[in-house]
Length: 325
Image 1 (cartoon, rainbow, N blue to C red):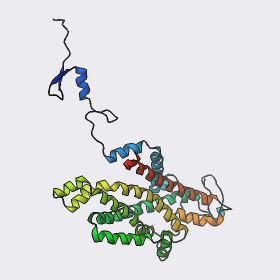
Image 2 (image 1 turned 90 degrees about the vertical axis):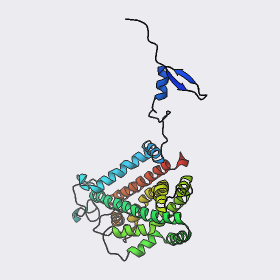
Image 3 (image 1 turned 120 degrees about the horizontal axis):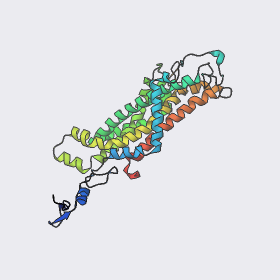
Image 4 (image 1 turned 45 degrees about the vertical axis):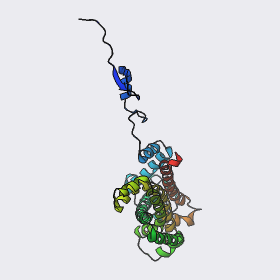
């Protein structure tokens, strides 16, 4: 058997001048390597706005903390019995305004109801109102704003004047007038009121985003190729104009939760026997000196919830706005 050494195989790569150069095995393998975890490499594909945003969000501690708080709120909203076994409507006047006791860590309110149980069940109302109102506002405002921005002309002018009228209505005063004549104890009147006065803001954001997106070259190219208006709007414009709407809607969600609590505190939002942080804050206000715990716990829960959604919106805004990178 021959003991001669085999020469390493060579790879041939073309040069920019049309010639060829010999590469060793190591050099050839280097050219064929796929991009590493950091995305660098000759075969690296450009990332989209959404993939870049998700990468930034995963590294943002503000997003992680706010998302964990919101997930916990959603969990106790869906399954409040997982962390409390009491009923929010079960009260004992003999324990009215008493402080913390075993099994009742938050004490009792002026009616002898367990503050801890009512605080837990109050999250369901706040999350439901915030999420449903935000969805309604986002859908209605996005559709109207996108149509006005895309077609322009008379429809755009009419929508702009209508939004000016709604912007001129004070939110709290409008709630006092409109909701005072409704006797329903459900969340739907409050949600409907928020959607009625909240869509103009999203509409203007969507209108501006659509006007900017429809001027891009890829939209003009699709129009030149014969794409219909519906295809242009749904396939080419909407995916590139939805980012600012998501940012504004996420921040507004926390505002809507605070608005529901404000209206319930004033007596025109949710009404007993509904369980709401606003109702509990209103009921505990006269006893703030004798039983401050009955006011502080639902107020603290409301503040944490609103802050979590606003922080989440800020994190999403920073991730989706290329100017902030």
